[in-house]
Image (tube, rainbow, N blue to C red; front, top):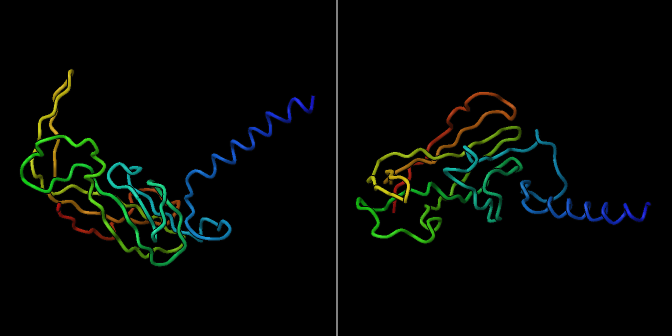
Amino acid sequence: MIRRLALPLLTLVIALGAGCGGERHHLYPGTALPIQDLARVECYRKGTTVELRAVDGQACPANYVYLKPGRHQLRLVGPPNIAAADAPPTELSADPESRRPVVELELEVAAGMHYFLGATLKELAFLKSRSDQTRVWEEGFYKSWTLDVYAHPQGAMGVPPLLRSHQQLAE
């Protein structure tokens, strides 16, 4: 009886261990620290407008990371619908992700704080009508946007206050 249970149990333990190693949200060396000793940096709206790509040159999950207090270099991508010109593109890109703007940001974080990164679309470049077999819609492309940084203490409720905005222009 014990032998029949041992193999499935061992398989489950290995599978759980492998699943935990996929995305590492704690980006610092050493053992795990208490949450109150760390800063959480998160893409607002779960990364739908901006996504993390790297922190201090280290690849990271797109949605959030825990960091030790101090100054960190963040690399992220902005919204997908940024246009560099006042005219619509003549063709659709096979890889729309490659057209997203890349932003480098230095951010000073404090222990016990929760930081949110988000984008606010600003100047409209043009609207393009798109269609498929069932519907027609207009898609806006923007010439400018801001990368916004919000923060409040971890566990706080409500809308966090805006710390600063970084103006971004399409290239």
